[in-house]
Image (cartoon, rainbow, N blue to C red; front, side, top):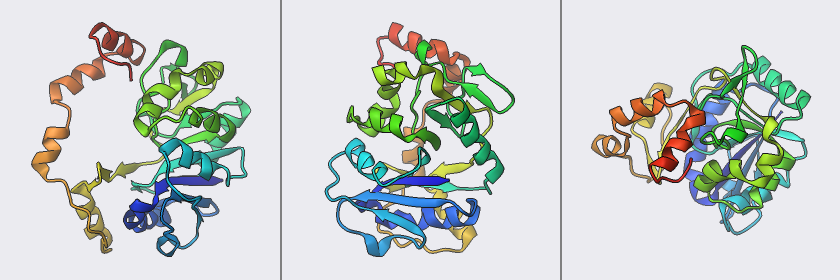
Length: 259
């Protein structure tokens, strides 16, 4: 089992946080790579992680391609650097996900239903119907990827946002449209703790509970700032009522770009 954490040199201050929760909740026996182009931060790399630094951080896609060049397995788990895993992960479920994807020659299996799938396969997995232009086909939530296919998508050189919203509508994705899946329940529970360079306030509570220090100069978002960033309650509830296969159709009618 291979886990690749996609990062960059300027995020070195958050690696100890990510490492603490990985050590506490992730199954043993997993090879962990940290990809972080830019200034050499080898002194900051948590113990047990294999550090990848290929020089200048030119873009999200180009750097991730660099990191994947060091991964020898055909399938891997891709994780962003600011995910804190909150509960013990069942290794049997992760192995089951790998088997499922390999047996179906799939290219992508999201480990959390965010967004969920649109065609249920069994009690564990659903298909993501690429042909119906559902939103966030290639979401950067924690997922299993076929390395060869991921590298193909990255050659479009998308930013992270464009990767999530556009990579699933490329010719490459259409050629593999039967190979996108998602779990029906969260098989890894985690929280995202950095937004636009600032920490979410939730991180303070998590670190206090764990009795670990935070050695970083990053500011925290104020609660009033978070409220402004959050989608209005009515809008979020209305979106939840729209089936995924119709969501981008509705956005098009409203003159908005698809997700």
